[in-house]
Length: 398
Image 1 (cartoon, rainbow, N blue to C red):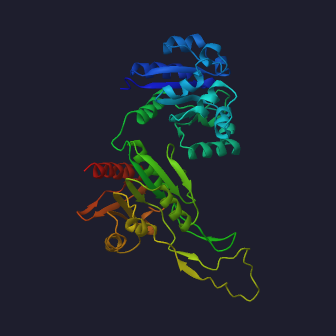
Image 2 (cartoon, one colour):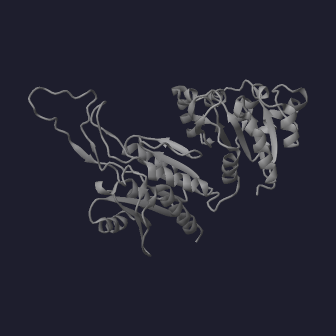
Image 3 (spheres, one colour):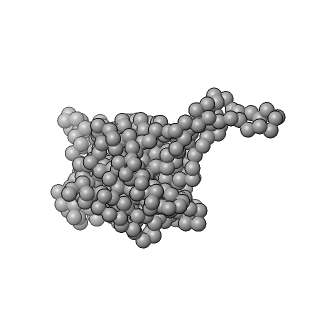
């Protein structure tokens, strides 16, 4: 139940606005108070009377309302709620948020708030896939904005694809996940993820096959338990989850700096596949073949050991979890790594080509600690993440 919670619901201008009426009913059925804000475009699809009747409150739409603004109403509205929900979140609203525009009440509320924000995008598939919208999506995710949807399906325009607003029940579930306090509420957790890229020259680099899927799933699972997550990610194929603070890096040295800057933290999970070496004599321009058939002489130097440095540092988190991706003698190497690095747990997995784990959707891990070893059955990476996050929550409360 959401008794005692307050949601500020911004209804954007799109055919999916009619679903906002069902969302209001669902929220009020959970005991949640809903303060509606209807944009000028949104009023073309649903009437203020319908919204007000279902919400049981006045509908706000004008930025320069004499009565409200005599009390700085837009500031009060933006901060009196536990959560701001934008449904539907149109391409225009997302663009305004990403660029910091405040030309109407909805955009001003979103710019003036320090309240968590959840967007339910809804637009034509071409608009959703447009590079401008995807850039705005990346900016908003980096700002910690959470998203639910969009779904794929047939659209009012007759096209098919991603862009349908999530169903009201799915939006309600996302709202509950954000408002119902989890066991990690008030805890800051750092998660590293993805590969690093170590440049050879401006065109080429040394990297690995990590997709970042497991790290992203872990960050999402910790977020869902209420943690404030700083997600330090290399150039991963899998996008960062919503609702976490994203710090994008490329090299191991950049990742170390980002992790150090994110401290202090209650826990840190080092799921990134960090390159062991970097090129000492990386070229400032593209290396060319010289016709001799001789390959260029690359000089390598060891990268900083991020896990070991954090474990031995003055700001060491209470719980430090490392990963050991191995191809042979998996448990032996992982046990030695835990002792050598000084971390509390090591999550060991076999990433040999035949397992399909690196870059795949499943994982099979053994969690090694001073108390013993626990081997989990092969399961989806999301399930591994949920189980690991629950174990982290328990450890931090012990």
